[in-house]
Length: 217
Image 1 (spheres, rainbow, N blue to C red):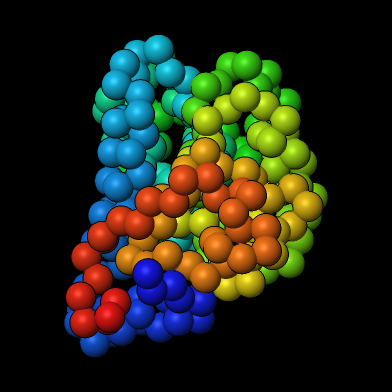
Image 2: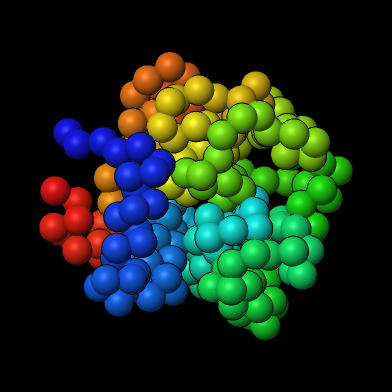
């Protein structure tokens, strides 16, 4: 099975966007649908589920916002998105998806408010905090969020990569969010299978989000 480093995956994404003209919004929408469909397959009776979507400032967070839309439409018992201030969201495509879920009436709270939540209020966690560009340590509230999730009984689904894992080296930060499933896009990442990767990724699902096949060979 072919694996790629973060740098190699970013180059695939760049070529898909710049050379083939695939909009970031298309890749994000396809990724979000894959995440939501995986969760909906695992939990067929969504009316009993309480979902926390943890979304960051970049495109990984945008995947989380868009996935929240699909999950909300499945009518779970509750769904709350925890994210930074809208003004701090870096990606324009992510900001668009944030605006959509706000207009849909999906409950949105600041990320640090998750720390004050009773974890028993949730059954599912969607981890869309950091993507494949992450390296180093989770700090501040991010570390506390990771610790809280890892001490809970939440079913945690990682969007592309568990937050806190270096997707190239497999070295995980102390409070890297441990997933029951990692839903990754295009190709598996090298770090999933080395160092701490196998301990935090859970089951690895490789999903097709529309990259030209030639770029993945």
